[in-house]
Length: 534
Image (tube, rainbow, N blue to C red; front, side):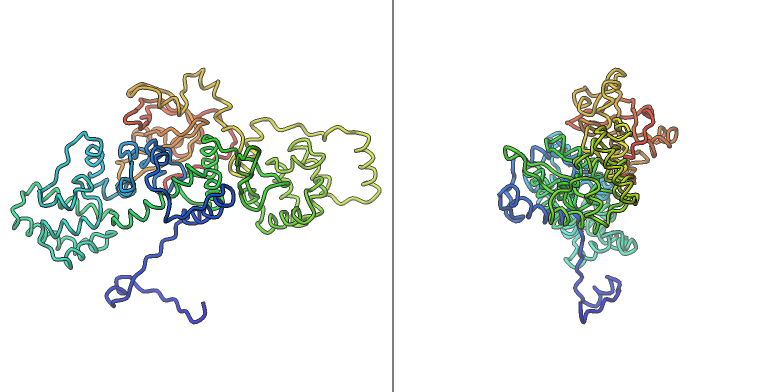
């Protein structure tokens, strides 16, 4: 921008000088929301406004209570999925709490379980001292927000508003332990002056110190909850548009595009593969018969294909119509090199071209068109083609080969999940699907298997590791004890397809398998990617 200078200053120095500090946070979900606001009117005919979404939609909240939240902002992680059925949100403020409670501060401060028990009516609502009831009533007596921190200090510690703001700054993002200790001395003195019992003082101090491990301001949580609700609303009501927007704004969120596609398919969305005859540069919504909407993968999912080349392909098709053959495609889109054509052939994107029987047939034809030949040899080839109508000499790809090509070429498959092909074998071995786990009772010894899509080792989890495994029916969550991790470190950190044996935890609609043994499923070359230790 002309006339603008950019300098780097410490933010605390800016505050001391009286300058206004503005924290600009880039969120990928905002780009998804923006795309949805364009796609929904275009394909569904509904005008939507982020500020005017229907409040407290029953279907949306029912979906949230089931923890059916893959792709939704802030509520899609394993920890969120494990807590949201217990919180059972029915209105917007419940979602504000849900966004804020799964954070290091509330977890270390031991606020999560008391809140959930009170939310479920299993524990009476109580307050450290009666004077804090107005401060903590909305969060059932459990301090969750920075605004409550300020008011607690003022009510029980006799802090002024300025001193409470100093405390907020001291605990915010672990900035000043020394200053916080000084303020804790003042807080304890104020609590003594107010005749608060020593054990109650410890509870209050622990709650405040936990915010140094990252606690949310309520205003921040409300802003995030609005985006979370919007993402849930768009996914539930306009799945095709939401999925297209999600896929076009990767990388973002907790799950890979492969998981997003499989989740959308389980919710009834038809996802079609890349096809040079119809695919755009990015994923788009398609209209089928009877007003059914589907999703078409874009050329942006072809690994190695440059955006400029994809744009040239789309422009050539728009200008002169569909491509007639592999040779026609190669001639009309000069930017496509031999490697690009081979990649398109391997993922099946050339299957709808004239004369192409299957993926390897397309590869064979690419070898022919990519080699310069003279008129005599070309005429001889044409004569041979007219005399022999059979396909090329290469055999069709088998199921495993197509899966390997799909994942290597696009990072996903629009066909059945890899685990679907092994379901009969797994069922014979007694392995349950992710869906079947929900139908079994708590404490039962089970076996399950799946493709590892996420690995987590939270700093607050005392060394436990959490795996998320996907199959054709859904996602199963696995808890790995530190001792098992030490014995099976390679399997836990690198295994792509695992079989897990252990006891089932099925409580309040939240299902985990506490692993006692792990086993690698038969080796496969499928290049699945997982979201590991982020």
